[in-house]
Length: 167
Ligand SMILES: CC(C)(COP(=O)(O)OP(=O)(O)OC[C@H]1O[C@@H](n2cnc3c(N)ncnc32)[C@H](O)[C@@H]1OP(=O)(O)O)[C@@H](O)C(=O)NCCC(=O)NCCS
Image 1 (cartoon, helix red, strand yellow):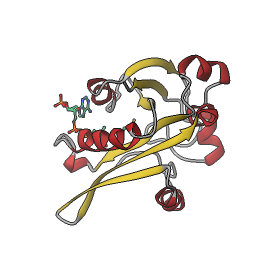
Image 2 (cartoon, rainbow, N blue to C red):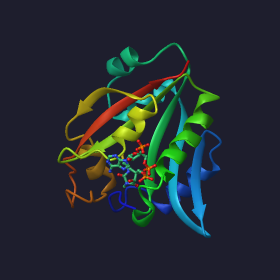
Image 3 (cartoon, protein in one colour):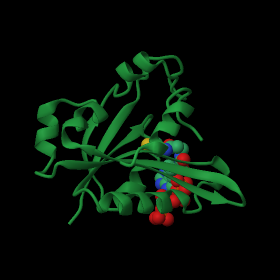
Image 4 (cartoon, rainbow, N blue to C red):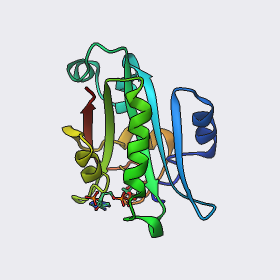
């Protein structure tokens, strides 16, 4: 699976699994984990730190609801990609969030005009609300993770921010 080296540590994954507001979804086929997805229910006040965006931006984009759904990441093993696992994990995650929130936000990695998760989210009711350049620059320097494209920090990739409004 292909996030930058150090982007998700084992310690973080264990913490996510213990947190009732976080769901780590895994797809197992032939006793092997072939994909996973992490979704979280967060307080509205936390959104700006999750999205690395400012308070005004968050105020404009959020409704009155106290909680927000956040899709942290989804990845499928390379040789299992294109077989519907990403879409399945997305649907399971959104079903978990729909019980507790009215809005879900997601950040999609974009580089050299490629955004693998974008069409999957758009086909599932997400709309693009912003595009931010050098999105992971500060975070990659702070946490010292290596982007698979940029290598050593800072990461220069852009992010597309999407939102889904639940009825
Ligand atoms: C992005 C990713 C999670 C998609 O998972 P997947 O299991 O391969 O996707 P699925 O087979 O469920 O495909 C779902 C839909 O997305 C489309 N799709 C899948 N990969 C795509 C790509 N690279 N570019 C454009 N569309 C794509 C499929 O055609 C399918 O469309 P359909 O429902 O109209 O048939 C997977 O390719 C992956 O792990 N990539 C590397 C990690 C990554 O980039 N994660 C996202 C970071 S933002």
